[in-house]
Length: 227
Image (cartoon, rainbow, N blue to C red):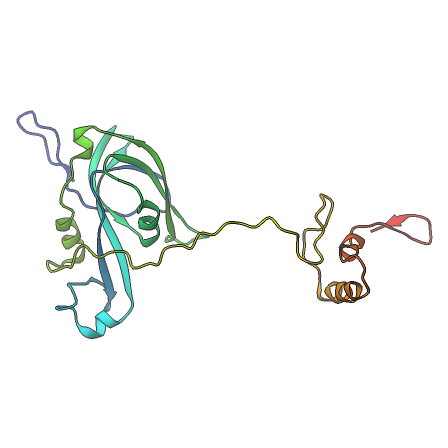
């Protein structure tokens, strides 16, 4: 909730935690770096206080990483950038990892399938701003402590998700049974067609003949062609 301005000062808002919604695209500008924590599920999601203070059973269990970053959210109806503590998922952090985020403006959205309200968060870089009012960093820890109702939280945890393995694509011949023509049936061959392909390959025939016959009209007894 915004406080009323006094003595000519601009309105102030709490930098509460912002999760990327499923129903819209949001635009934010980063005011600082992402700070990570681990969470454990113990009847509810709890922030890890660190290996020394965390119950061993909880610490050995499944953990989920979350990052939190100081941002300003653009609210188009108010034409204002309001302070928020952005919750960063593992996937989004991996996308942002190679960027110097301070001052960068990003559009973020959550990819959801069907009626699911949760899904992977994706983003796109828009521009870089240097306005002091937008890029001045602030401490996100109080907002995170309020979110989890915990004072003792181990901040500064790196995202444990292994990096994606990026490899070049290969331009090579299609697999046996596929026909590389515009009129070819894009479906893979059936089990019967695969067996015919093997027999044909053993006799030195052209394996694509079977795939081509799937789309070649044949003459019927009445003289009309049928597929």
